Figure (cartoon, rainbow, N blue to C red):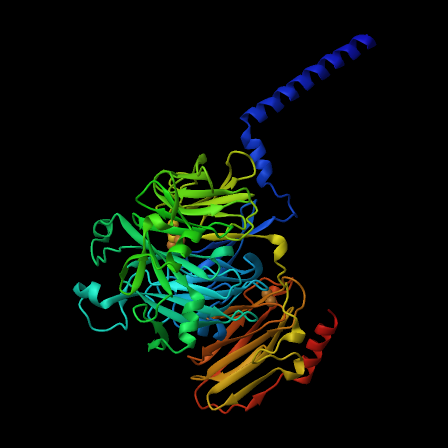
Length: 636
Ligand code: K7E
Ligand code: CUA
């Protein structure tokens, strides 16, 4: 009996193992899904290997994702007010936005040193208003918005930093008269001009300033990339509409067999400006290539090109002709030889044109609707195919053949490879940034999300790992190794020298000069000091709140009832917000960011009295309150 029962157990055990083995095989066969899941799985508490910065398109900001998990970590407000943190609401960020409440952000550009991402800054363009923002990757905050850049009409080919971040660029997508004035649109070819601008970046601070502008023919300047290695010192810009149409562009701008890309020698352009060869137009030094030679050249490209991408070696310039099934690869050495030999076929408004055959190296038959190309570390290029909804992988170099293709869902625009714009792409991943998601996600009504897809490049074949929706509308993105970034988690109080900062309860006060009232206050768990503030109707009140916390993730909010005033003050930070005391009565304010067990108690009152009510020139908290706050601070 005993023996029999043992045997029975063994039979059951064998059967179980058999089932497990079968299950195992099934899951492998089912298959790829299991292994793909493992490749994107980042265990709870663990962190991703890459930061990915996706442009927010007409949302005007930047989305930060972790890769390979594809988790959305945060959104950085850039060109658009953001109410939760109060971006565009506090005085500093409001001034930076310059009255604009939207932007259309297309191309994130990480700063580089020696052609590799250095993790210092992130630049991004606002196309319609021709602005460039710089985000400091020390705290992931927008620090400067440069522009609107004079004479530039829609900065699409922007910012595309140079290999040592000497410059970021902008070029007019829609040409206009320069200077803009009263002209007829029918006089387009005569009076309209495109502009290419080189914006200098201070190597220490990242501060942008205008270096030079170049007057270009009125084509639609589209995309850009920086030369590197042998092509260092040159910047490339594609264009469409060399037909110079001003209406029905979808037909009239697709007539020519060839459009162009421009090669701009930015060192020569800067030198010409420094030598006084520019004309000032709207405050910008503008160079006219008809008068100043050697700064720009045009090279023919088939059929309305979109992306221009320089390979990691810097030898090849790859242009994607939207209406052509090929990537045209140009040799920089050939371009340079033709320029040096002054072998021109003509000129366009003073810009010499080179011959197509003199510069072309290869045509790669990638497929329909090529838009953008990225690279890996094994000598391959990856080109997005909008019409085919595919990515084509091809050999950069002879025999220039297509090696693999993968379907994407749907209608891919840009793609981004890990460290893909550098001299040393890592070859781990590419993310497809698809323009249409159609049926891929739960139905949320007519506003569909955009679609992004993580693809593994490490095997011989591209492998689709993961789909993730994004809010409107990433165009381009960049991915940097996480180990390169070391953001701070609190602002060191000792370094805080912001206007309006106070660091001791004794300094908290309300100062009045005429009808201007300045509140110098502290926020700390769980108290506003002062929390009762007396003002008069019509007063212009400036609240300067300093968050004395030095603990991670303890931000406080400041929101005023019945108003649009709200902001977040992060640990160690000082922020100023302006509010007009518009109405006599009592007006509560409160901490809008959940900060502690007594968050709900973190509130205060504005007592707004009628105009002319006598008020002290300075109000201070009483000694008891100061002692309480000091006790609170000491207890931490
Ligand atoms: Cu969407 Cu670079 Cu603006 Cu191409 S751009 S797709
Ligand atoms: Cu402070 Cu909530």
